[in-house]
Image (tube, rainbow, N blue to C red):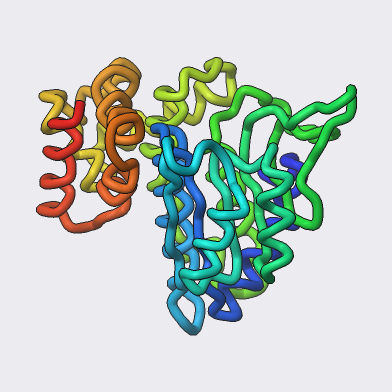
Length: 285
């Protein structure tokens, strides 16, 4: 259950409150395939879950530049999130070591949710965690979640499961009519395989379920377009396709240009736009 992830229930309450109040949420991504799929999963999932609320959610994203910004949530990135008009900052696939960045975000009035899977910093034998924020990470101290090998996109998916349960408990929808966030599993499978995390029983299940949906044709237009430019067939998809055809085309954008291209490809519902972006990613690759 997602509630086994330490902080997931608190994250669900924070996000449910923010969505219900019409607050602007901004996802801060990492610039590899795991970060891109985690960002797309968060953006798509939050928008999907917010559709049943009185006003549509405001969800944006920001992708740091590998060269200019470095890794993780920095004070400068927090300032850029604030300048976008956001009120809630959500990290995906980063943030567990961003002590100064979180502190600055809190000083300028942002609520902060860290979702990550990396190990926290250790200084003089003491684990250093960001303060005054919500953290969801299976590798933080005292987290009972059984899989410590989960990719960042898997962590985000479980936060969305917890959020759906929280919104259901608040009467936003019933179990029979709740949003089908299992449609996000193709993205979860892609990020999990591309990040080369250990395929323990938990990750293997996520990948298998994602591949099942890809083969059935239930995948975002951007993933379908990436299959097309790679010369691969979604209905015969395998983990090889995810790790050696789609993943490298997204990773190349983060290394050589702008992962914003990859995230837009994974978040757009416009098939024509997705095809154009996939061609650009293929050219970079």
